[in-house]
Amino acid sequence: MDINYNLYSFAIEILRNFSNLEDVEKVIFYILGHSLLFFNVRGGIKLAVSLNTKALFVTKGNFLSGGFGNKRGDILIGDRAFEFYNIRNTEDCIQIPWEEIEKVRAQIFFNDRYIRGFFIDTKKSGSFNFVVVKAGKSLKVMRDFLENEKIVRSKPLFSLKKLFRK
Image: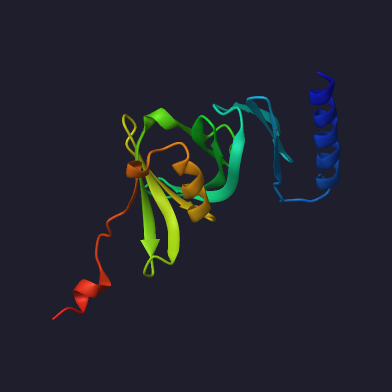
């Protein structure tokens, strides 16, 4: 309990330093056991329960929901699930357990030099499109929990090579 209280008081002290900045939302999260505490400058403290016990890799990314308005947030890859937490609303999260993932399709461009992001196809919930800052590294971490056959290349809708073919 003392460790949690010390982290809590430390986070409150950090928030006091940021509180003089207007229109800036800083999100600092600490992993306490299996719960993520989100400290937001304007919104106070919100609790989101993580499926993971350990966070192995954290990066920034966007969730493209299809229609208007993609969601910007943090991607957390842990020992039990893939998780996406929205920056603006921390209660708006996507948690996909490793057992639920059917296939991960990587979006590869420029002759295998650039990985833009990936699609996660699930057994029940459909497909999720993520554009990730460090997509290559996140796919390597995901490979530890998924079989190599489940991580594949995404087939492009159209190819520029087909346009210039005779």
